[in-house]
View 1 (cartoon, rainbow, N blue to C red):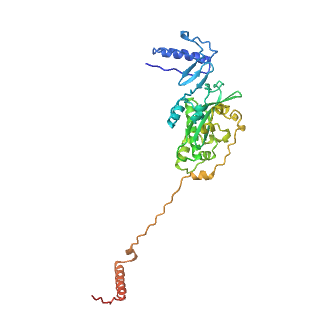
View 2: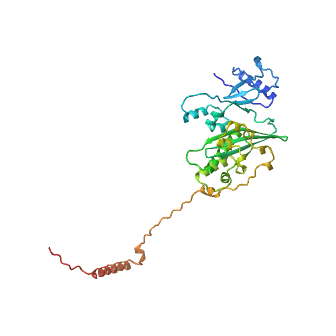
View 3: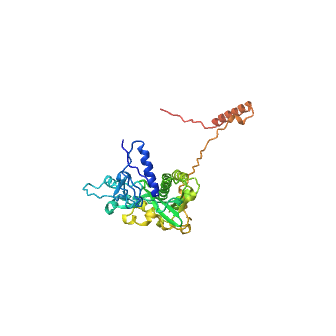
Length: 364
């Protein structure tokens, strides 16, 4: 039987020692030898079994990502290779998918594979911990940003932690998707971005066991926010997305953010590695760490022409029907009806007799 790595995260040295001891004893009951321990807690004095090193500075492959034990960071690397193959769509896509990044830290770069191949110089190192604060007795909340362009639509999720006046904010997941080839309007793409934002936020809450955490959603599309917040007879495309968004989130939690302050703008348009390294992408806008008064106002004014174009069309069909008159109902008795028929016959015969006769003679 083959057993893969056991990966876990704890908040203290005491929990580390307890987890190592309990998991080893539990698996030993099934004759499984749990060994090869590695951890990033330098201060831990726990004596690991079999004379194993309690601290290993080397990088370790954990679920496809390189984990630097010393720095406690994940590394996402890309090795550029020389190739004389013809550049095709298949080739570019193959190069882009060499980067294994299930969390989506590098999605603004992978959106533009050519730029990625040209500019990728060194590894990107991402902090493994969601926050430097102890998450116990900490006020946690999720901040979700959504944006779209004519090329793609994207979302990113930040975890905000506040404890005793200290606030941290960390990117925990992002996702971008290429826009459909058929002509889809920007407001519709913005609504699609809000849809995947609601989906990913719901997934993050379940994965991190934060079902009751407060979630705030941000978009720079006034039209998409109007559809989400207002009830209306929307057309099928808008109605289906709005229904899903409202099922996964509360419409009162959606806010407006200016485009220049929206970090989801990066994965929706693509960027260089130099731009990606800025704090704006990893920690979100600076006002996320401040009080609510410093955050963008939620007033917005949508384009009513766009809004009305997505309303359900009402079609009224008018059919002209010919009333069938029941002739016999006009007479109170059968005799009167027959007398009327006789009068019609006499009148028609009289009119026929009045017509001039053709007395012309034909000869052969």
